[in-house]
Amino acid sequence: MAKSDRVAAIGVGYSTTGRRTGLNRRQLVAQAVTAAMRDCGITADQIDGVVLHAGIAGAEPPGLDRIDALDVAQMFGMMPISFYNSDQGGPAYIHAAISAIAAIQSGQAHTVLTVRVINQRLSSEQERDSVQGPLFVPGDSQFTQPFGSVTPIQTISALPAQRHMERYGTTEEQFGAHVISQRANAALNDDAIMRDPLTMDDYLNSRFVSKPVRLLDCDYPVDSASAIIFTTEERAHDFAKKPVFVESASLSATDVLPAGFEKVLDMNHNSPFHAAELMWGRTDLKPADVDCAQLYDGFTIIVFQWLEALGFCGEGESGPFVESGATKLGGSLPVNTDGGACNVGRRHGANFCIESIRQLRGNESGARQVKDAEVAVWANAVGPFSGAVLMTSS
Image (cartoon, rainbow, N blue to C red; front, side):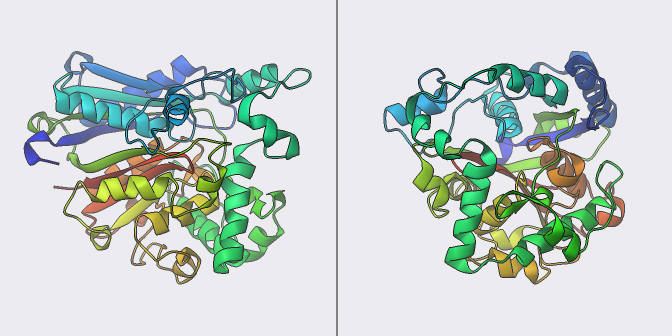
């Protein structure tokens, strides 16, 4: 990214967060945006762009009754693609961030507020109302859903995890090592909800959700809003907090489910590898330059896939890499230093952007601060669609 085109993050904020807060989406957004504006000392009249993602829009079954940009790209054989819009939940926040970056670089706006919000009660009611009575399953899904492949737990977690174990010898204990490490980080984070320490016995005794995925491998649903403000490099130094700069960013979509099952399972061809290739191709920095990584953990296997896709370890080596302690605080590559979505709550990537910014500011993460952190990467989603952003402190 040309230095004259650089975009900076200047303000971050969270709303009240909890399993059932009693707050609606407007209230959650108001809290998060107010916090982000106070964080950097900006006023509303200084913001000229807003991008918001409010959760999975609708609950229509995939196939003939729903169409979005990803469906069009797949219909016409355009995959893989490197820019798109989508209502899918996993990559939700990274769409907002990259839209803001693009708007600033193209001159459409100079300062953009990005927001991610989800209300569990509304989402649960929406999902419940969508499946009253027999479920109509059109299109490609008729060949997968009747046989048990119904949710992301199966499609982007259980099946890839099982294949990773069979192909590379990855063990349950290696998955557990990551879960335990994340929880230790969460214990140092006042924003985390799950903070009690975990042992390997705790992990191995937690129930299976879809084997080999356990309950402790899954992110934690919450009511929450997150807000991040981006601006130009020129304006970034006018605000209260140290700016953090976007060095490189990417989006990727390969074949969407269920038609893209084989590519989702083949970790050398799914979207994280494509997103990583694009991101690294837009910077002179290398994986060895990264001081900390905030990697999407909707399910544990996703972190393992991102470690390999981003080049922090070789193909099939993420299990031993995590087991070695490399991803712990104090290791060669601290991962999910805020505790990850399994512990701070499901925010679909916004927490990873905020944690990267706080780490690179250098003085906001307390006991979990990575010493002399100058480069951070955060990555969002997995399987058929994903993205990654590289950020620097200067």
